[in-house]
Structures are given as C-alpha cells and as structure tokens.
Length: 143
Image (cartoon, rainbow, N blue to C red; front, side, top):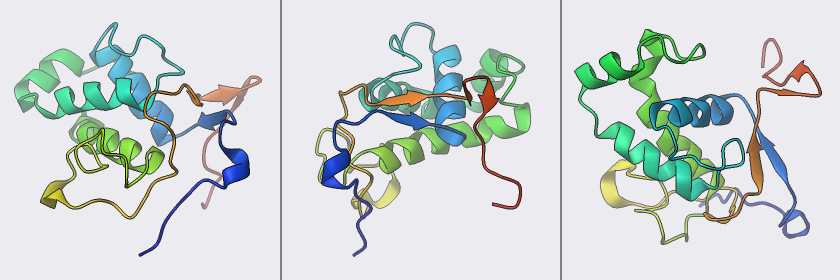
C-alpha cells in the first residue's frame, strides 16, 4: 500500500491549493453561497460538505443553477465537479480520517483510499489560489 503523506516537519505549514483544488472550491463557493464561509482558505470540512450536496443534485438542477455562473466551469465541465470535490477531499485528508465517509467523500465501494496528504479537516492550512503575486499558478505546458 502506497501512502502519500506530508513530511512531519511540514505539518502546520501553510500551503497553496492550485489548479483543480482552486477551481473546484471556487465553483463550490459560487454554487453554495455562504457555505464556504472561509474561502479561499476553507477547511476540507467546509468544501467536502458542499461537494456532497452538489453530488446529490439532479442534472437539470445543475444546469439551471450553474450554467454560465463560473467562468472557470464551462457546461461541459459541470458533470465532473462532483468527482472533483471528492478527489480534492481524498487528496488533502488522510486515509485514517474517520470524520469523512471512508476518506474520500463518497468514493464508491466503501474502501479507504491509500492515503492523502493528511491535512486536518478543520484547519485552514490550505489557501486555494488562481494566482500568486499577480502571476497565474497552473501546470506548466506539457506537464
């Protein structure tokens, strides 16, 4: 079993969540006004709760509520936002985190993931960003 863990000396350090982590939390902050009250420094517990609610929406409701509301989420990207929220939770938390529903926010089969980075579900250790000091933070070309 492969574990993806944060080195102990980095615990409590502030991190930036970019790319998918930013886009899904930004989308959730628009989809559920007021639910991510600490955005862009929302703890995992805030966005995972909103993501679970988004996953429960009927497709017609998703389109009616969200089409054109977020410049980073075109209509063809809407079907993936539920998965994105579950993936973000799994990446940031730990497999032994029993606060969630298997460490993956609904990830099928009831099994636990091998392990995320281990951020505390209630800490504000990750700031979700699209740019830093005026520059975009995205994957490099070809990555």
